[in-house]
Amino acid sequence: MLRQSTEQALGAAALATLMPCAQAQTPAPGPAAAAPVLLAAGSLRQAMTEVLAAWQDAGGAPVDAHYGPSGKLRKEIEAGHAADVFASASPEHTDALARRGLFAAGQVFAHNDLCIVSTPDAGLRADKLPEVLARPGLRLATSTPGSDPMGDYTWQFFRKLDARRPGLYAILDAKALKLSGATAVAPESTLPYIAAFREDKADAYIMYCTNAVLTNSAIPTLSVLRIPDELNVRSVYAIAARKGSDEGERLLRFVLGAPAQAILRKYGFQ
Image 1 (cartoon, rainbow, N blue to C red):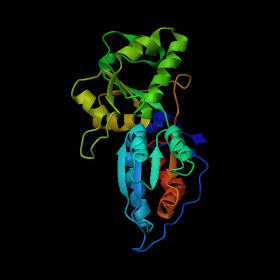
Image 2: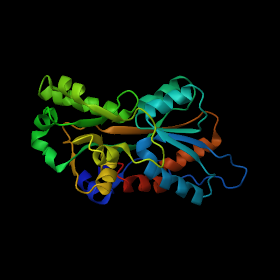
Image 3: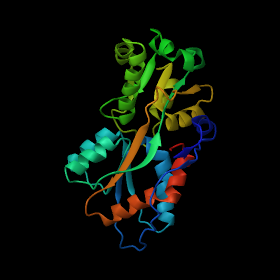
Image 4: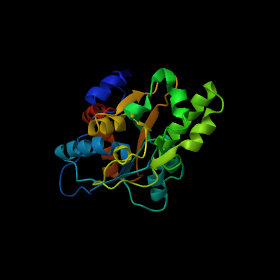
């Protein structure tokens, strides 16, 4: 996979990546097509909104889209929430639905990385990352592990740090402020990452680099640090269609196709 640097993504919200994907499927036109229901990870909201607009421009039916933490959405599907397509920030959740026979096997369609957004006073530096994050006075915000894959990836990052400095995992696990990921964010609401800084609840926030772009755009005074490769945890996004849903399968193929992939790259996905 060919990818530009994350630093370019943070400056221009664009990453160039070549990834294997299916050819774009032109959706079947006509009023007879049922409106598919999409459940998708909250980090996909901005990019997927544009993808769905492109889908409709190509003749697809309007999509009833809902966004939230992938783990929570998976539980809703298992509890009976009707959905034709599920776009998760972790294959763990699409795989779980496939094992239960509710959805077909998931397919990887995007990747993301972890960044840390911080106030200028936090003094965050790549070469001093463990020391700064462990500082007692630093308020470190995260997402919620278990409910949100972004939280799961963050705790994996904590373990990588702990491998270098034993005892650091316990410190970070205890101090982390879980300010997002437990519930879905209403479309009209301010993103929790932005709200955390505006309401002075955090000095640093570990999040997807795509969310860092949005947060830094809203508050330009914040600093953005992409976690170094040797410590970063690459997130894997998987998409699956409900078994027997023809319209869901068409939408899935569209997301895997070239036009939708170009939109995802524009928003910083890889």
